[in-house]
Length: 91
Length: 226
Image 1 (tube, chains in turn yellow, red):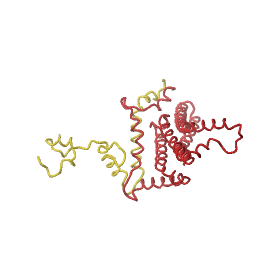
Image 2 (tube, chains in turn blue, orange):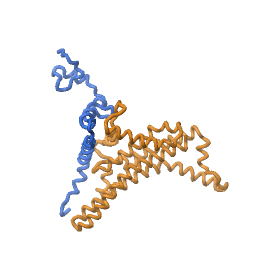
Image 3 (spheres, one colour):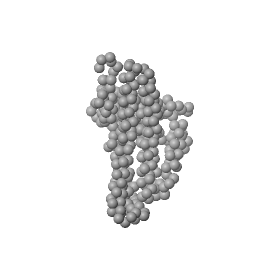
Image 4 (cartoon, chains in turn red, purple):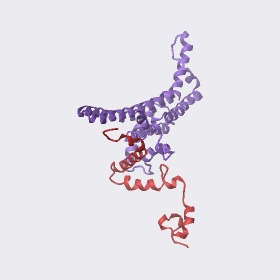
């Protein structure tokens, strides 16, 4: 099924079902494609950066969101040890 | 209490997988790159700071020593950012682990020393014997200088580990003390809280200073040997 837009650049929601296997095989699965590695990063980093950090009037908000996410993530990781530290009358 | 105190320094795992590699790589996300000469605010700020540190740190070196600029700048940025990120609540600081600091210190020190021995052998060996020592003291002094040379990487690593770990531990302890004292006597808890604030400010300074000291010492070892 020929389509005007080349298959490689389509996003997942635009791909037709019949084209799905060839789409999956053509994708760039290296870490640079997925956004796991540092700059010049995959699309995920670029999208976040351009939307929240690289704006005309910058402020701390863009980076602070990342740091807050880092804190939240670390809290989830250490939840198991922190469970015991609740404020109770009797420990 | 005892077990809880040190669990914050254990290697973080996510469902059994060690994710410490992701945590070490995380600070790199905070330093964006760009093709342009002048970019947004955050890049300008970072460029300004890096230039400042670079000029101050590499001024004493010969051109041969300045080839290490990239390495030393990456080092100081890595240590400073991991230390500062470790001051956020609940985060894991890689530099509290001796293994990581040894991994930073030993190759850099060894590189500087091997460089010195390869290109300026006589000067490097002559460092073992300071000028004007009495003849009888020479054997002992050479042994002492050799030991002090080999202790340099250990000192680098242990200094960083101990400083950051001790700071984090103190903050944990004083924070727990403040919380425990709150129900008993509020004024004492207030004093303890003020101590906690001061300690946090100190920790911010220590985070940066330790990075600086580490890099400075490596650059000094480099300067001796180039």
